[in-house]
Length: 264
Image 1 (cartoon, rainbow, N blue to C red):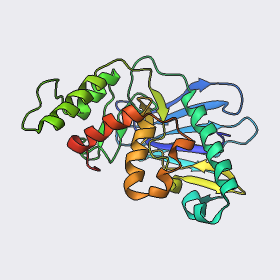
Image 2 (image 1 turned 90 degrees about the vertical axis):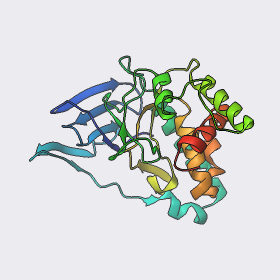
Image 3 (image 1 turned 45 degrees about the vertical axis):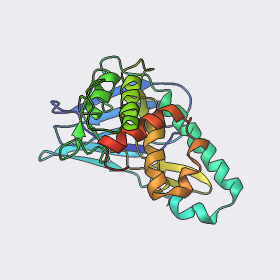
Image 4 (image 1 turned 90 degrees about the horizontal axis):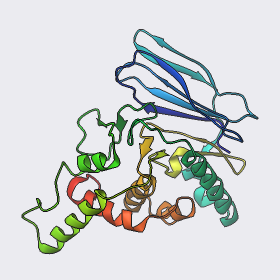
């Protein structure tokens, strides 16, 4: 399932060049490669199926810029097909997407950091207004450190000039953020239908991985739910069919976005 996918856009600071194998596994996802360059250059990941040829033919640096030569993936954006396919085909595609997400979640969690890019470097997410241009942040040693950064370091009991109901919701958010969390999972960061390529009723590629990385387990779900509710209500109705729902974490994130985000 997880076969011709190029993940691009994460950064590895303080590294002149890196090409490393991060995970070897069995089954359809046979090889996980991560390639990076100097700061502000891209790192790329390749997920390759044992039954297919690698789509990345060459990767190299020239004059300080990173280049990747890869095969073209023939397919259409799911967003353009969604309203023209049957309910049965939609459910089939959502099932395929669920399998892809499950394979991403099965990747071995890094031990040296909790929240960061594929190489342990900084992350990119244009939805995070706290990050200065070019909107990069992290990495973070713990998920709690990441949460603290998201709320600008505000501690329990420090919020002021709020209605009591708002104060209570912020304190509840902080208490949840500072609590224990399961290990981070590898996350695409923007699984909207425009980033999913389909051919002959099969998902053949997922693009735009610049916001991918290791995040808390809820991040894929809450980011997509909050963003889709505003810009793509039709997709919002289907998110629970390919991502595990985390309603309590969604409530927590909605509070954060209200006070520290740039979407809600």
